[in-house]
Image 1 (spheres, rainbow, N blue to C red):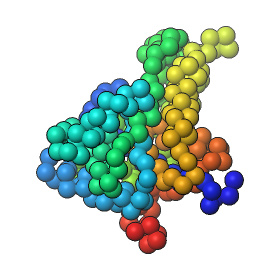
Image 2: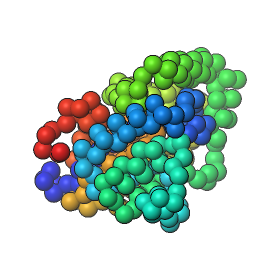
Image 3: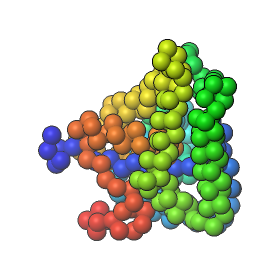
Image 4: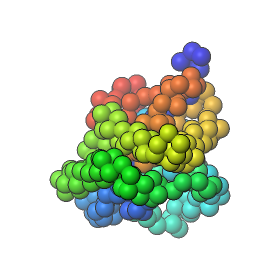
Length: 258
């Protein structure tokens, strides 16, 4: 498909500003509603607007489309106060400032049975301690580094660091370590990856496809742990032209997008 006939995509990986505590390793965010952080959020919103998206997709369940869009319309009318998470602070604010009339939740996150991630870690601890050590230490090192960065960096700089290709690759390496947990007959790490993690990201990708058309420019705002796979799926689909989020965050965007 010619690039002129492809939907243009921008993927923004974020840390979870509202501290949901649902990831493999969790960074405790500071108060994004504090005055200093609100100025920094506005800086990021202003830079994302330069991409000029026609649609903004967020990490909220697709099944909650009606609820999210009721909130969004209430926000537009001044009747809804934004909470401290990236869905609201980046997604709602950017969409509102661009004059959008709706938001696009594209997530899927259901338990359909099978091996839980906690059991994968327990198995590794009992039978493959070197893998458990690698999983635990790598995760803890990333959390500690992120906590230190949060004390001194702006939100824009935190997002730039989190979207660096090397950082995304290192994050994905953890899942490749999970794949090694088990043995030839009991591949429990792979069971979790296929049953949940890859399934979830493939459904997110499919949901993004369902809201896209060739004339669209779609901004996808998601937890950074998803970006490596989503980028892979989007590139391999042949349906999208994927732009670099760094050129917008660092201010080197093409003037033609203003």
